[in-house]
Image: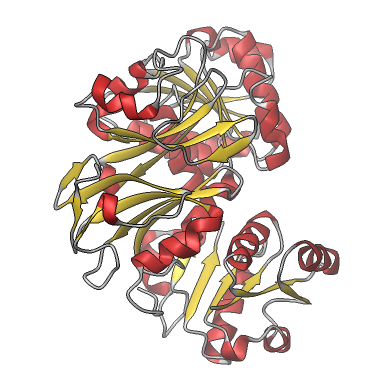
Length: 458
């Protein structure tokens, strides 16, 4: 597959790294020649320096025979024009654009992105994706990572294991005997900084991080089994009233369980916009780092603080201060992945990486086979892939134990009709089933082969 990626920032870099690592023909375009040079030196990609929306630049990047263009520059307008030029001048069949401004995403303009107007096949909104990720973190407060699969019937939980985890030093194959009705599979383990797919004889140890694929009805039970307490989040303080904070507050207001929400926003203008847009949320104009404003918000009575300003350091420091003021849980939005190792030493319970959420959304739309969902795990080290099994797939009609999965691939769950079942060796995979696979990055190409029916996109 020949892919042109416009924008060599964090998202463009990660997509380029993953697609080039899977032996695709990747060209990266950016106006910053230094970023292009860095990408070509570190990755197996070609590079073109220039404005992505210029026809001459796209021609130099090979747009005439490209299968896909991903416009992920920092400018919404450049991304839109790039897709238009790719379509009108070069006939590129698949076009994905990242758009940040909410004005472009209003439902009233839903028909704007069509072949006869702005020919964009898939629009990715980082703010929407981040808001969804924040809501999932709030719904599973004992996890450091979580994602929903199979129409809400399953979840991937990331759990940091401590000394009081009841199932430490127990071979994973024994968990079925100890908890025969638990619909959960340990699909990934990070130990000493290395992520791997465990086998049945592996054990879990304190300080491990485990990724567990679990039926949604069994989430609370799974958390208890792995030593985590569950507590309902009734009082939420959001620091940052921008697009992400506003979207999270709106979603919490729409719930029937009446979560009490307060927003702290430094900009008076933005605070007024948020106050006008929300009904039950209390909006405070002030600095989320200020002790007086935090005390006014009753930080010591809050169940969780969510720091989602547009500045990483502000989010980290606000989360640390909230914990110091006896808030039991703090979640920070962190764009810079190099800051992630600081979260545990600073006692920040979870963080949201916008790059990972955006990359996951883009990958979902470019994988071969009938892929329904993808979540990028860690720093692109693995993926959780949900896909429908087609009748001509090598998986169809075979028992799980008969399928020669690569060593770095595990089946997390299977959905037959509207029922999710725990995979066992004797479970037969049929056409039409939906399967969830945890795959290490080096095995994704083989997973695609198992899922696809042809070289076409679905």
